[in-house]
Image 1 (cartoon, one colour):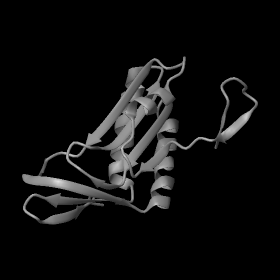
Image 2: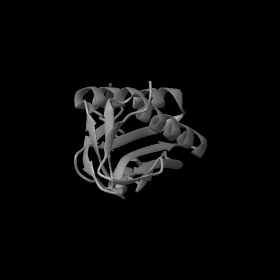
Image 3: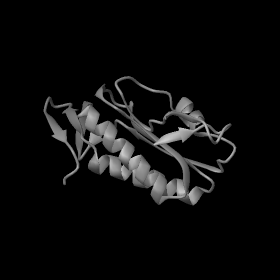
Image 4: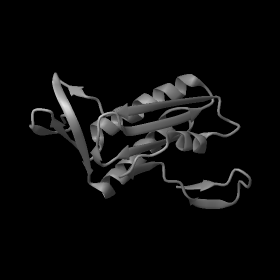
Length: 154
């Protein structure tokens, strides 16, 4: 699906990629700015951070691994579904891969809409679908030296 330039409804620009994997930290202010335009009346976002405890265990850090090609395809599908299902203007998501320390940003979702209800609902839909459906696996390392792979149950 190609996007049309806002200045010229007939010109077609490169296909917009809304889902990205990142091996390095990223700036959410820049991502947010890319979503804003004069039609936007609401912006909702979700940021998932690496926390120091999970299920009563002290977490030392984690690693995200992804089947990258499939993750990108599935991420684009989820975002396209949100654009169809909710009255929103745009939606983007970035998910980290690689080693992350406590306090690092792991996933960001940003949604713009004319009104807040649609932005909030779409943002929740996107992060829930990302967590449930993406071929991204989390390897948690614990303070006691143990580690385990986590992914939501099917």
